Length: 94
Image (cartoon, rainbow, N blue to C red):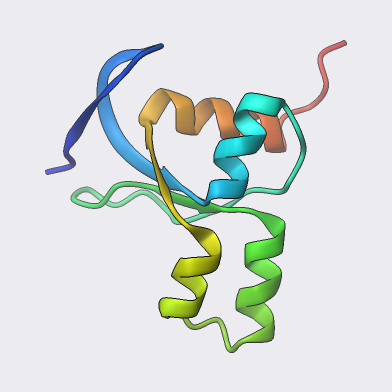
């Protein structure tokens, strides 16, 4: 079962994670890329930016302490995760 978090904006939602770069980009509306794990029943979704993806590719795609330090994963509610995903992957609506 995925744990719940209390989001100031969305209320009680399921927990997800993103790298610090996506979390900052969510607030600043910047494009940093969006790579993510496929949803699994008992695991929260996890997303990482283009720079983190580049690091993974250059380092054998191994999640290790160095990667986790670089990514500095932050908790997001599931709605914030979807908002970040839309901001990064969605089309500009202007």
